[in-house]
Length: 176
Picture 1 (tube, rainbow, N blue to C red):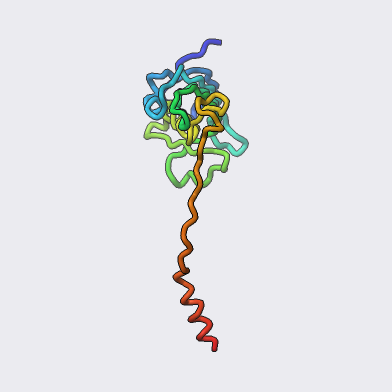
Picture 2 (cartoon, rainbow, N blue to C red):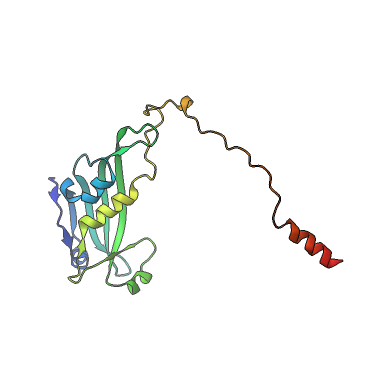
């Protein structure tokens, strides 16, 4: 099956009622923020979307996305390829009051005045959040030898008198 370019926005409620499924891609040109926080996106992001209505009657969007990005290793400063795979479930909400009624498994997807959600921003946000906080090669692939890594020792601080020790003496003198 050929992967198609996904629509920019969708009406989650209508798509859920129709129980639509999409298997498509988001092009690199559409992922400006992801490109900015990485050293580049290697190819288009593969996305699978499934719209449905859950047993409670809530409209939901289940999605999987896979992106290959370049990151900078924080040990050796070399660039390496990282596969970022995400899965999430969203439910449309119109205002903050509706967020409280959603089950914990669902993330709120705020809809615009037309009742639509921007799919590209939604998926791009999830990919950015899924990036590692500290990007590093595997130790075997890193240019820095594990034996050569020096973490240093924390020098002992001179023991200073506790400023509250005076209060301890004060408390004992009041008991007498």
